Image (cartoon, rainbow, N blue to C red; front, side):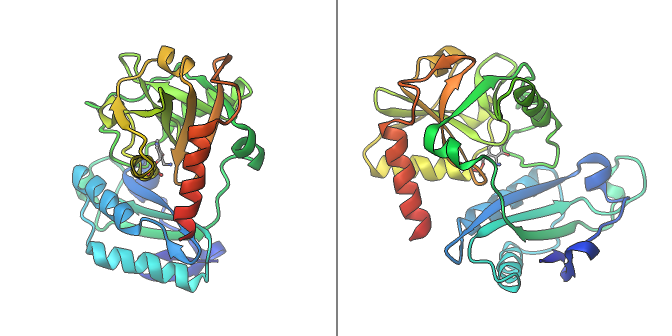
Length: 283
Ligand code: PMP
């Protein structure tokens, strides 16, 4: 494995950054998780665009154009000879003195790791997953816009811990008002009357690239989609429910807080979308 750091490649054991990097010290940075399917980097343009939008929002000087960043990703994939896999693209504020002031950091650090990921066991994709609602609420959108894909995941990690402590692998997070935001690393969808509903980003959800892809697929299949305001009641009474994410892909949810969703197994709309998604990523 060859890891890209600031234009150079290192073996895994030599791929190191400074302990004074503000990405480590303060979580000051942004990232993208990207899939490689069948020798192609999936939705590269969208991921690079989102990265640069996150950078703009946190006033991070990228010192590389979007095109250069895209080419660096493609180069890292080629060097690692990966036909299927997962890319972690990270940009931190860079090295600086102690103290959070980002203006003291000289230059952003760019890291590209080309590896693999499996977030959930295969059986969950076939049979569906059980999740809980976490008591940890999503950071309010007016405090930290959820569209910024930042290195600050503690809020989500707290919810993940709650899931693990109750014997589940994933948790739904609500926003401060009690509306459904998203899961700890995935967007959330429900099916009601054969239409798709997902919480709008302003409720505290990342503007997911898989979420957008699934909405496009759904529309092309004649399934109406909505960015909506959802409560736990809506989840419990949904006909179907599933989560989406680059790492997770599409995973059916069959139980939430002990309530069985639909028939308690992956159902027709979810299965149609999973099949169409598989076709798309292999095309
Ligand atoms: N929400 C959160 C909090 C995430 O970290 C992610 C990505 N892992 C997602 C949603 C899904 O986004 P995407 O489909 O763009 O990977």
